[in-house]
Amino acid sequence: MPAANLLLAVLVPLGIWAMVLAFVLAVLLAINDGLQRLRRLHQVPCFRCRYYTGSPYLKCPVRPLDAASEAAIHCTDYETADLGPLHS
Image 1: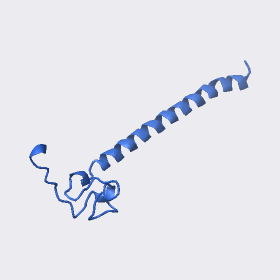
Image 2 (image 1 turned 90 degrees about the horizontal axis):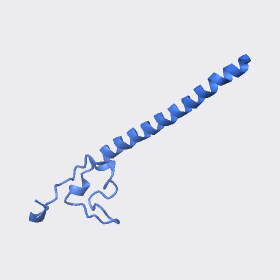
Image 3 (image 1 turned 180 degrees about the vertical axis):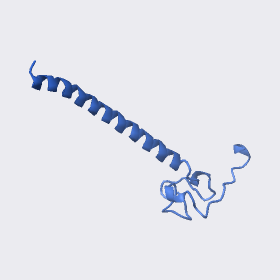
Image 4 (image 1 turned 45 degrees about the vertical axis):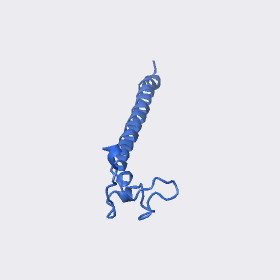
């Protein structure tokens, strides 16, 4: 077997495995990024706020631009909603 064929017989499988490994690593990094973003969005307090309306047109009359976004995580106007006896 010539040296060129031997070199190809070694390099091609290594290249394939390198691409598979890179793909798996990219998928794992994307999953990790998605989980971090999801954890961050679960910190948004809007859905438990007194001023949250739930309307798709105006979610919050106090801070409409920040409502239900990452900017609302440290909202200074946040007040806990009074859920009443049905939710306790």
